[in-house]
Image (cartoon, rainbow, N blue to C red):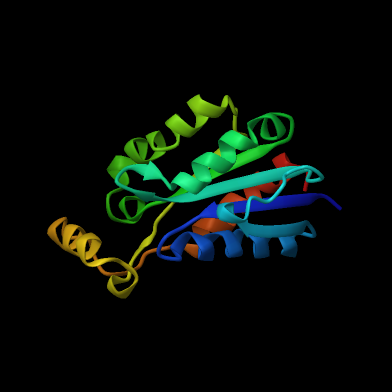
Length: 167
């Protein structure tokens, strides 16, 4: 049985839900999984593969997640590593997928990691989970309220990534 670490960064909690779903999908496939926020600084040693994801704020991954990747770059380079980004734009404007994918580029450039895959998933706009300023910006952008995570899309991505992780 392979062992996979799922690390995530989130502010509103949306990406934590995606990470938990990824962990559940891997566990259903018979993989031993640990899911942890980047702030907890989990050690990737002892894992056969790693999945790292972040929500987006102002076009960037969360600082704690970028820091975790940078601190663990050497360990991530020697084991299969997949990345994912959670962003409302994925659900609302599929023509901007290249733009959303590019949010990962600074993380890759700084770390030198060559991921086995990069997933792009829709997020949410649950107003009570955002600050006043964030709500104001999202409303000005006419962001649709609600949870726009596509669980079937996430499950399908995990099914494709799991064999590459040694699962």
